[in-house]
Image (cartoon, rainbow, N blue to C red; front, side, top):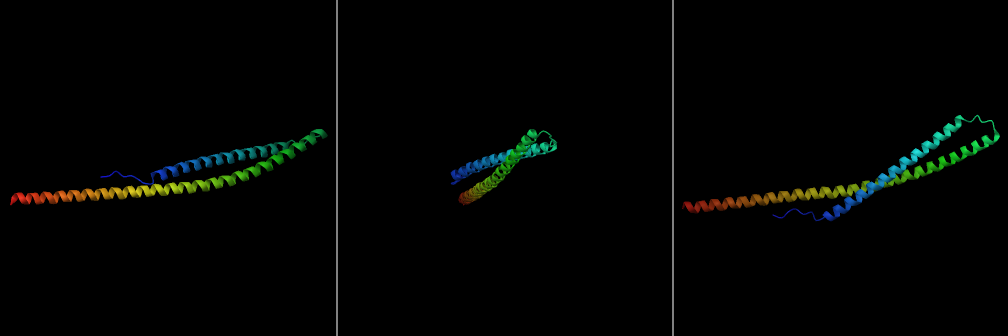
Length: 146
């Protein structure tokens, strides 16, 4: 009997590679979001620390402190913008991965179904062969008895 061969094996392998690539991209996007969240939290922490030390009496230090706060707020706004963009990219990457994984899973299920059908076919063929052998043996034994 012929060995089972899935005709779409190359397509399945290709879809597996695509799913792995999409998974890798998603992991990169997740790392980027985590890094940007960390940077944002750091900026918020620095702003909070600076708010505690606002009792500055020297005018030049007060001006420098105000400029520093302004720069921190600007960096924070920029970081939040980047974080929002990164989250959108993360969502898109997740959607791409889910589609690729679903396509791969569909082919895997099809392969399993075809493999199961092949096994059933082989078993039926073996049963037919054994039935034929039994019929031939019974016929042969009947001829010998006559």
